[in-house]
Amino acid sequence: QGYLFFVRDGNLLFQPFDPSMLQLSGSPATMAQGLTLYTGDVRVRAFAASETGLLLYSSEDNSSRDSLVWKDRAGRSIATVGEPTRFGNIDLSPDAKALATTRLDLNTGDVHLWLYDLGRGLPVRFSFARGISREPIWSPDGKYIYFQSNRTGTFNIYRRPANGSADDALVRATEKDSTPATISDRKSTRLNS
Image (spheres, rainbow, N blue to C red):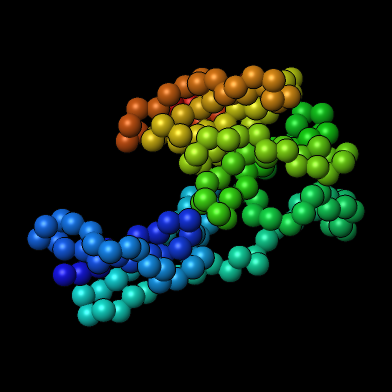
């Protein structure tokens, strides 16, 4: 008889497990909270259990937040955009009136795209699929946002109208276990694979 350790919603859980029967028993119990770590666009579950009964885990400080701050050429802060949160990739629209960014959902561990109206500083969630959506890039005319998402298990490139008027459209699929396609040239939104 042993235990199976797993992470659900950022909590480290354990449940009695019989390895000879490959069967769980009882209900899961919480060992620790706040285990979803964020490194760029990658979420990492950081824990290890030893046969001696020792458990090592790294918990996240949920008070850690980033702020989007406008600065002038001298480096002085001019304004802050929105509330502090966990930001990832950021891309400014061609007309400099909006930005696309990624934000970590601390409850699910998913990474979603968000758009900010820079005049009002208001965020609007832009992607809704489970998993990670990352690397937002505006089209040269500002009408579309291209991004990567692993909603199907591999990172594919999708496109969605910046005004949110239509669903995500698959632009380029990536073969399993290969390097994800990327958008390398913002001026032409040229795709690399």
